[in-house]
Image (cartoon, rainbow, N blue to C red; front, side, top):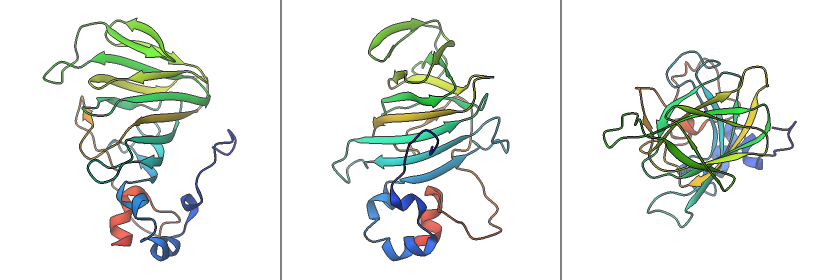
Length: 209
């Protein structure tokens, strides 16, 4: 991120003690799950199936006024984020620099199967259509708008390098708004053998309650 001049807010680098001293003032950060987020989707094989994320801003349904969210992600070459869609969230996925991002698309059926209908979508406001399972390659600077009910999986194109990926969306709720095509684990199981340098979003309840 530093290489691409994408800078994070100061609290990204707080220690556990900093969090404890500031947790009341940082209630929105904690309650809306902003911050560091690393997942292997239950695979135990992060570099083949996994994702690094940092949530910069996010609202919370029926709690605050903020109706939007923003994330920055790092996607390695051929590192898969599994096929999924969202019931509520509409999002733009943006290639912020580095390699190319490959996205495979399907429409979802009413029972959450993969539809055999063509998928119509927009990249940077331009309407496009691919066949079911079709691949869209986003080069640096390009983006795609993913509507509700649109299955997608993505990964970095082989030989092009890791990708810095942005997400601008409606409110994000990883606990209830992800429909994965296959059963996966959204948050990793971590063996805590030493104190964390920085807290993950999944650490807040454990260390700050």
